Amino acid sequence: VMSRENFRRYCSRWNSRQSFDAPATNPLGRVLGNLLKKVDELLSPASIRKEAGLINVTSMPATAIQASAACSEPNFMLYNRELWPASWPGPSSYKCSWSKDRDSLLSHLRKIQGTTSNRDQLQAVCTKQKFLVTRLLPAGWWSTVLGALKPLGHALRTDRTILTPKVRPFVDPNVCPQIDLSCFFLPLAPACDAIATNNSREAKAHMPAPSWLRWLPGSSLLSRRFVSRESRRDRLIVDLNDDVFVRGESASNLPQAYKLRGWFWWTSHLLQYITRPSQRLLHDLELEALESGLSSALASGVSVIGVHVRHGDSCSAKERHRMARVCAPFEDYLGHIRVLSQRLKTTTIFLATDDLDVWKAATTLPNLTVLTMRSMSRLSAKGPRPQLWDKLVLEREANHLSHLNQRGAWDATIDAMLLARCDGLIGKFTSTLFRAAMSMKSASCGCIPPFVSLDAPWCFDYGVKAGENWEFPLPSAYDEVGRGENRFWCQ
Image (cartoon, rainbow, N blue to C red):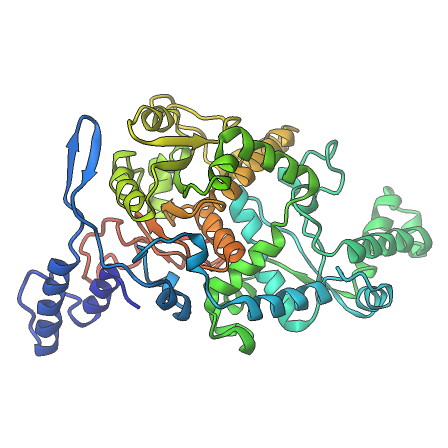
C-alpha cells in the first residue's frame, strides 16, 4: 500500500539526479517518470481557495484506502502520511484483526512484570527473574516517556522485569517521592519495584563498608556507594546513551510472533502499557474531557477530529535545523480539516495547541465546533520565543523548580490522551506528542484511524536520527548533495 508521496520517493531512487519534470536519461526512469505524472493527475491535491478567512475544499485530495489494506501492511505507517476513509459508518467499522496478538502480548507483559494476582507466581517472578534498570534521559516530556519503549521491548525478548524508570527532572520529590513514571502512570512492576527497593535498603543496612574505608573522611558516603554497587549484581542496567543498545533494539529484532504486525503495532502497544494512567491522572483526564466537551461529543455519537498544532520552541531557527521541521501557519491545516470533516461527516474538532493565536483563530471560524483543553497555558507567537524544552527542563531542576516541569508534563500527557480519544487525527509526525497520540489511539481502538501528517510519515527509533521530513526543503530534492538534511531525531 503506497501513497502518492511514497511513490514519488520510490521513483527518485531510479531517477535520483533528475527532476520528475525533466526527461530521464534511462528507459526505466522515463517509464516511472511518465507513470508518476499520470498518478499526480489522478491523485492531485484538493483545489483550495480562500473565502472570508476559510478554506473551502472543492475536491477530495487522494484516493481513499480501505482500512483492511492499512491493517494488513505492517509497514503502512512508515511510508504513508495520510489515510482517508473510503466510507465512514463509524469508528467500529475501522477495526483491525489484532485482538489475538494484542491479548498474547499483554499476557506476556503481565507475566514478566509481576502484575499477576497469583501470589506464588508473583514471588517467583520477583525473586528468580533478573531485573532490568534504566534511567530515562531528560528531553521533551514525550521523548523522555518514549525512551522506555526499547528497554521494555528488550525485557520482553529476554524475559526480564523492567523496574519503573526514574524521571527525576520531571518530578517534584515533595509531591511524589518515588520520582519515577509511577508519578504519572501505573507502575510497570509494582510488586517487583517494592522488593527491589527493600532489598537495596536491607543491603545498605546490613552490609558494612570495608575496613579500609572506615577511617577516611566522608566514609558514610563511600560506604553507601560501595553497597549500592554490590546490590545491583542481579540487575541489567541499560544505558540509553549506549549506541549499540539503541540501534540493536530496532524493527529487525521484533519477536517472531509479532513480525507480521510490524514496528508501529509493536511500539504502539508497548506505549499503551507504559501510559496506563494513575488514579490521579485518570481523574484529571476525565475532568478535562468533561470540561472541554469531548466526553459529551463522543458519547452522543459525534465524530471528533483531533488537530495538533505545535509552535512555541519548535519555531526557533535552531530547532528547525536540529529537527528538520518548519512552523506552519494554522491555514495550512484548514484544508485537511475541511476534507476530513467531509469524510467523517462532522464539524467538531478537538484542538491541541500551545499557540494562543491559533486557538483564537480556530474559535472564530464559522460552521466549526472547536473543543480544547481549558487549563492548558498558551503563549502568543507575537511574543518572545520560549526556551527549548530540553534546556528548560534541566535549568528548572537545577533551580529547584521541578514542580514546573511536572505541571508541564502533566498537561502534555492529558493533551495527548485527549487527542488519542478522537476519531481522526491531523498534525505533524515531526512532533513527538502527535506521534504518541497516534500510537495510543491505534493501540486503544485496535485500528489505524484516519489521519493526516503535514510533513513526515510516522516513525520511532529512539537514539537514532531515523525520521525523514518529506516537506523539509533540501538543496536538491533528488541530488546526493544534501541527502540527510531532512532527517530528525525520531524519539
